[in-house]
Amino acid sequence: MYLGLYGVLMLAALPLLFQWVPPNRWYGFRFPGAQLNPALWYEINALGGKLFASGLLICAAVNVLLLWRGPREVVAYLPWVNAALILLNFWLVTSELLLHLPN
Image 1 (cartoon, rainbow, N blue to C red):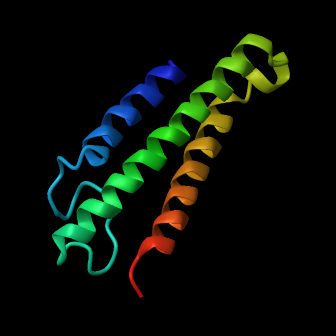
Image 2 (image 1 turned 180 degrees about the vertical axis):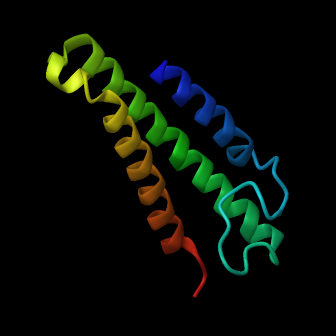
């Protein structure tokens, strides 16, 4: 079930990575000014999609390891572990993207 969640999130990241999503209000990494500059929009979202997909692969690997070798006490908290991993992934991607914005 948890790996399916990561699969769905990965499918959401791939269109960003391949720059298939034009500037819009609903889908993608949105930062001030990026919607007004299509080149910046595609650059930010391609990098964001790449970083987010990479982070999701790491999160999925952590899940596999916990399910395979993790103690029962930790596996019982796996939904919370997953929520924390996904939030951490979003935070790290957003922090990295902020560093790539023009001044």
